[in-house]
Image (cartoon, rainbow, N blue to C red):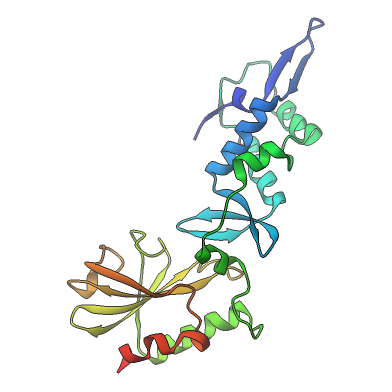
Length: 234
């Protein structure tokens, strides 16, 4: 996606012919708008601020440094419109490194401070009171689903979490118990949601919207929540 370079920098042509690259509040605000468009946010969680990114229907822990790096990477690609012929690539990067335009200030908060839903908050904090690791929770549930002979596919349309695995088992007439593995490629921030869904045929799971759907437990943990699905398995 091409963006206008003048949205992010101000080019000053001095009388002695020297070209100076700087930025003003409008440019800075546009940087924060861009970060917001990329999904970056900050919010309070347990009385502390966390940085995160909304992506593919879920949230991923991030950091202030990752926000800066994301904008820097866009600058490095240099895919902008309206770049004057006498502005060099390295001049723009030097401006970024010397002026450090991304700052935690009121303008930053105006564009990027947000609030978390209860579900998002559960994803971003440790979820097991016994301090079991997220990795253990994931492996524990996957082992149980295999034991219970759940089948697997991929969510191709984003009903649950796009391009992430689905595990399902028929539990009634056209009714299926479904687990979606969100953030499956991010082992520091993955987990499972559980659903009861109705499909006309099994092969529609992951490729068609269900006729009916209800959540059983978001952020499902086997040791804590198994009783919620136990009746469906008999």
